[in-house]
Each structure stands twice: as C-alpha cells, then as structure tokens.
Image (tube, rainbow, N blue to C red; front, side):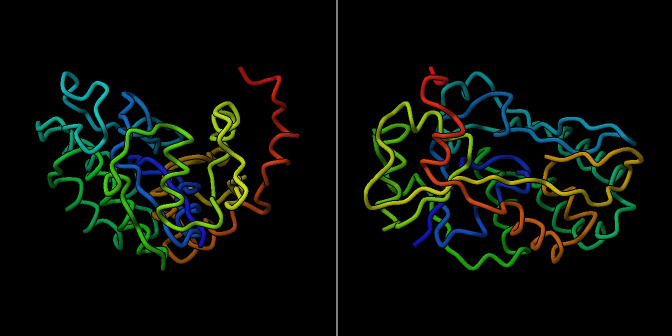
Length: 252
C-alpha cells in the first residue's frame, strides 16, 4: 500500500498531483496549522501577457493565526472571488481547454466554503477526478492526535497500513532532524519532479515552470496533463540517496 500526504494547497502545482496519482491512499492534512501567505492560500498563474503573479485567497486574519486549516475562515467579502475569476478569464479564455474547464471553475470560485481547507480540497478532488485518480482520499482530522511532525506522519502511515511513503523532497530535512525515520517496515521514496515545457497561452518567452496545475490543464488538457504529471519524477529517491545529496552536517 502506497500512501502520500500533503496539506491542502490553493490551486496546487503539478508535483502535488503526482503524489496523489502515484498513491493508493492520499491523506489531506486538513487539521495541520495554517501558515499565512503560503501556498495554503495562494499560488502562481499568469496575471498578464508574459507576467506571472499570485492568486490569493484572503482570510480573516484575527481568527486564523495558528489555527488548523479546517478552521481558517475565508474573508466573506465576495469581491475577491469576482476579481479572481475575471483575472482567470482575461488570461486563459483563449487557452485550448478553457471552455471545458470554465463552468466548474466559475461555480467553485464564485461559491462559498466553510474554511480554507474545504475551498482547496474541492479543487484538489475535482482535478484528481479529471486525472483519473483511482485511489482513496482520507483526512487527517479523522484521526485526532497530539503528535507533531514526523511522529504524526508515522501515525498516519500506520493508520493506512502503508508499506511505502511517497514523500515530497522538501520533507527530508525535518524528517532527518526528528530522528523518527527511516522506519524498518515502511520505506520512504522521495519525489524528484522536473517540469518539462509545454505551450503556455499568453507567454511569448521561455517556459515558466512551477505554476498551478490549472495552467497545464488550460493549455494541454486533462489527458495530456495526466501523462505530464505521472512522468514528472523519473527516479524516486530512497533515504540513503537523499542522505548522500543532503549531508547531515549541512542541516541545522
């Protein structure tokens, strides 16, 4: 059983969905702590021709600080939703697959959500369905716990009866510092996603990688985006390989 987990981001990038598509169980870490001005509430897309910028969901700051994602309230003022949708229309209306995606996106974006986790998860599950994900979604809030970081990760993996943990490469340093991993009975494989260029509407310059997956969906469509996502990591890196890349004495 392969398991992966991530905090639900707003309009995540392609690598986020590679972890989903490669897993049998994907855990949405919906009760993990919110971080302001992070990918929890924003991501990058085209703002104008040849210009990239942030698409940001405003939150109610006074009640969101140090709160879990599933308790972070979105600013109820509707103007940001309308402005963001108009921005998407302005930059992607001429993209080859805009008309296929626009009806659902408009309904989702102009609707309401109880919290930032719910807003993000709706998009994540919609895109996962487009990309033919056959696995199972679970939510960390279904298994309440006081454990943190690597101990919490191990607990969630055992909850899923995981034999292999598919992990974002950036997690290695804190996992090494915590001293919980590696585990004898659960292997860890680290992602090494390398974006390849595709034609981007509104871009007359060099390909711009690491944008929201919405950019790929608009430009090359769900079928080719599925292939793109699944082939992002040519070789998953094992624990000892990561240690040789990131020596312990470089981590503090």
